[in-house]
Length: 257
Image 1 (cartoon, helix red, strand yellow):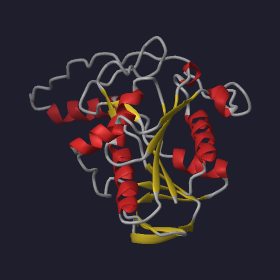
Image 2 (cartoon, one colour):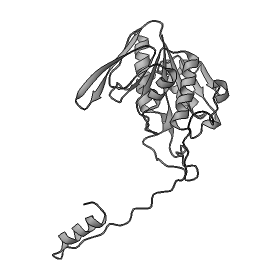
Image 3 (cartoon, helix red, strand yellow):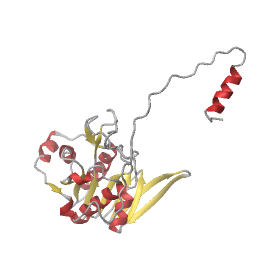
């Protein structure tokens, strides 16, 4: 069995978040790039299953700038066997339709049986990439799973609902996404870190995948972006016997009541 795990380099959640007022895109230099925490849980799920089973290969898949190679090497140290990295200047600021198209092309190229992803990335928070990939590949998907059980032919997991939980199952090949309720990742040991330096890491350009970023698929663009105005000082109401009336007038003016 071959399991592919979608991983992503994102700005550190504990760092500063900014938008470029020129491009409208996230300013990724505002904080250090790190592995998205939710995708690290997906890696842990894949590696844990590979350790308990025979003939299971785990491949990491990402699209991003050259700096993402360092993230891939660190993630390989967790126990994955190989990595696949799409690098192309045309991908800068790509929307979810293009991202799904590119990732699906790589996944079809490496011929995997199961694809595991996080449910919502910490930078874009779209939460639809796993479903879009499954649709493009024409395979089943089971998203937002709190638990995951893998066999040679199926995947099974529980998903939280408003009334409790539901158990979902899909035949392989399939795409699944995991929530933050899934166990967190392991810390790579020295042996894993040294081994990661020698593990295969393939890179692709859009031309290698036969993708034209301007054709066929609708692309969203940023029309304008501006910085939020600074917060103004609040209005102070002094009670001179009419504070209640002044407060009501204020709430009505702000259309809060």
